[in-house]
Length: 395
Image (cartoon, rainbow, N blue to C red; front, side):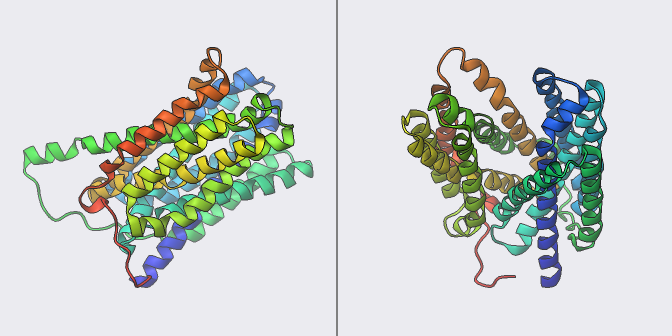
């Protein structure tokens, strides 16, 4: 059992890294794909909504399927879909083809996202201690690797179909190698509920919707950093382009490092403390960045924002997965789905607000969301989800 659990954990790391790598390769190739399809920025912005719509649909469909067939069956299917769909944007020669390609890529990404998080919950249940944040850190590392590999491929002049096609084949190979190590489905809860109880059981608990609302708010905050941190330094503080890029770099690095450290902290202090104090630090950091007249202080603020947010989302996913073992996939899909919508909503909300107030002042909306998450973090304290205990013996 210990060997299979270790193997299952390594396989989960592989899938998270693969997901980050696949989506990172798409991001790196966005300008080239846009030019190949012959569209402008405005059209691309609308087409990216199809990527989000596909992901949301995939998340909602695959959640119940994961509960029914097990993550061991669904994760490889999601990984194969995401890998195969990656080549499609590279083949697009017009807006319609690109829209269909992004819808397919988003669907595959949503399927893989929810199913691998459901498997991560199963691994965490086996370890009986927090391990979720490290998986999310591996996703970020996969994105960094994609940036390096993608930049190298573009520098050599490789076309999008060639590069993305090669990455798709690599993704299918990783899927084939990692699948045998995935954990077998856990036996269903032995208690057989009465018909009335069964109907209540199918209804999504209110607690899941609260967790989903928190995920929406906190992932919107993450989306704000992704889309507006560089513009804040460049346009708001007059930083050179190279210096402005450090804002997102500081945030992303802090997120990755923070997630690598969060599991042990969550085991010692519990997920409530991680979300409460993390969201508070994030609020303080973003407020500092928004109000700072100096570039170095603003960079410190974006770094604190990343550190604070780093451990929050993994705790929400973990808590959702532990609410009901037999509905872990469906519950994770709801939290992840609303969270993903929040990340997409960031540009849509902040952009129009800049017509009313300066960009730095719009950041106080995500500051308020972080403070709301800090005040309501107690929702994570409940029964089994409160905190998987830290065992002295490491599996």
